Image 1 (cartoon, rainbow, N blue to C red):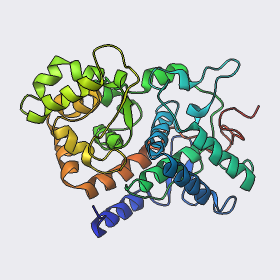
Image 2 (image 1 turned 30 degrees about the vertical axis):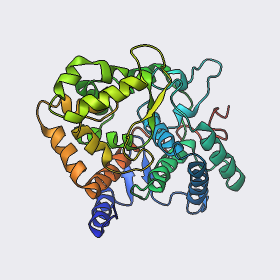
Image 3 (image 1 turned 90 degrees about the horizontal axis):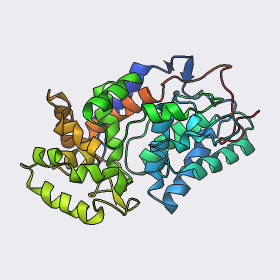
Length: 333
């Protein structure tokens, strides 16, 4: 769908609400933060992401997911990129991340090019934020200006990654709680869940969704649900084939659009957590938002811009906090 003038007006309104700067818990993020110190920073990130997505369209979803998994653990500070080292276990080994997160090599390449152009200037946390924006835009989603100035953490937290990241089998109550802990409300939950319009999931991640009897009963009225469930069961048996992949959105798996919400209303969401947005919404408010996004892609896009900017502000490090890593996988000292 062509993005209309109305959408752009909504996005401008969102940006005006945030102003030219936005307050995080620990400092200030600015638009055009690298204008003087590294004027080509955003262009370098964009070109690298574009090249990576041309080679592998699925990497767009991976880079967006990296930003999400970074921000939900100790804030948007690049901690998810750290490898294990003496005295520290990487967040990459957490249950929601292991054998699941990818795109690290793309971030490494971007960081290498930025260090060549502007040594010790652009943080890994900002690279993640920019790469997420560019990934969405390159796959047909909205574009937006990114607030920058994050600094990188000096540690990772495996425990926090296991505790705070939602799982594919999370109930609606759990999802709302975990988002609330990050300062995000149920509206942000529904909006950011739309990221699942791209990418794919392993059998082990959606097995509960297709063998859970209560979920089946909830969707009896959707005639397509039983057929879709049987298709998924042929891909993912009750045991075995854990690493078999299938798209999160079977309609347009490589595009960022609003089909995720259409799928939910037709009983064709892939993950248990996705379907919980409508199957477990006893108050009816969340499903109203799902219907609204399914009917109006521009509304979804504008809401997504607002929510991802809000998410990108979680517990940021600024000023003299943290550091600017030379290599995103390791702290400098």
